[in-house]
Length: 272
Image (cartoon, rainbow, N blue to C red; front, side, top):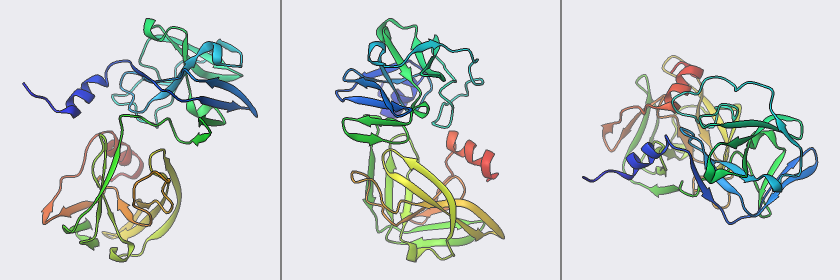
């Protein structure tokens, strides 16, 4: 019986996974390079959706000591990038590195013997070869594709039309809902700049917009990549909206709002 690749990936997410990478990986801490290796792995703990670096312990140039703090909370169903590194779903030992509490984790798995996974956020800077890595390590099995479309895209909030275009670009990203990027001139409401910034390792830094629609201010409901990464998708200057918080009418058909972990996080933060 045939199955979809997405179903295979979803089932595999419940397992401890790793992948060797043929790149020099370095990490800085307190002004010193404390990790320098050409034998790094990418490791995904069960239910983690983004990888972390694991490196041979002998390639860590700082003292490793047993961590004293308990794990940071109970693991939810899906461990998205906002879930702290200290939440672990595989058996192992939490370690402190260079005074950073719980910044390393040694798995009790024979295939990962001699390696320690490292908390990306606990270090001051990361590099693959001579390029800085920001946000989290890139997943080699994750891709982003953009396609132009002349099919109509209409964005609504509680019946108010906030964007209407036949010049959208569709952004397809592995395991995520399709995103609709529209030209700013096809947005029919004032875009109010927000102080919010986020960083995607595949696309770059996003700046956010709030809009008045449906009788109230909708905070941080849209975003723009003003200067995408050089190898990122061609969406510079376009505006996308959270499909989880708006209604999208695509090619004349109203789409269901996406569910899942992103929708849950947005409901927790914004209510809708």
